[in-house]
Image (cartoon, rainbow, N blue to C red; front, side, top):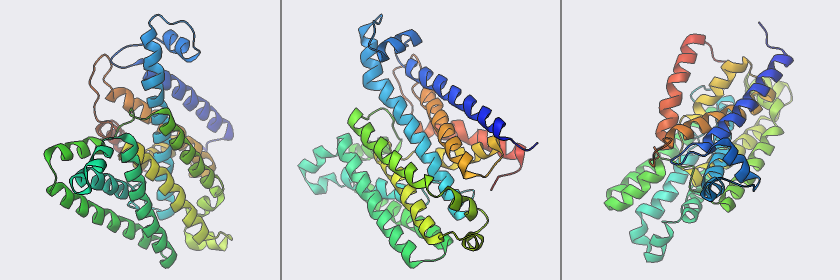
Length: 344
């Protein structure tokens, strides 16, 4: 059965409804359970049964839930762009080495703090310092990839170059780790686990602005993206400026992936698997439908993973990176085996 515009609309309505429900559930769960009535009262500044609920919602759970939505949507869209550009189902938002560059920036700040001085060492323990270091590392790798994109005409060559940058940065991180203390290694390891709950409202604002800029760039190239699915030669025959489209994809993906990694750490699975899950759900390769669908689906899955990670009624929180892989990978394997088809 061929999906119709009405069926797409109904599926979008259902996804948005699920997103709202999961969003509220995510805010309500945690070491302290807050009923939905308490959440609504806190959000509209009404009377609450316990005043501490208002502080918990505003200062921790609401920022974390918004961060989860941005991170899930941004990584999922980045993954879709990479899979379309390289026409490779295994391509994800990290294939360009942007995440590795961000990790290198954080590694230099944390693991190399003893060589950089006491002031830098204290700076490395702040979220702001980690975000700046990660952003600088991601920007350096982005610059190198963009220079390579100008020199290299073959898209697959850019993919290989991105993977090589990832290998180089991993090697440097390994060397820094070898000469680091146990406390430095522990701090870097905690950052690499990923986290959604450490951002202030000002940091969320910066993350949101970058997210909007990245999405805005993608909106202008929806038709060229559809043409690229049939190959660069076909896209050229349709009048698409392949080089310009490729550069916009690289910039948008780097912005989304780099800033998300800078503020939340490297988060696996989402960017690779959500596009496949969405294609199986909508049975289409049209980016006009896939882009918003992938964004909503990524936000839902990220919120679900975060709800599981924070272990309701417990004071412990599991690494979000582990949950995204444990929760999502088996589902995608099952769907792909069951459907036996990937839409491109």
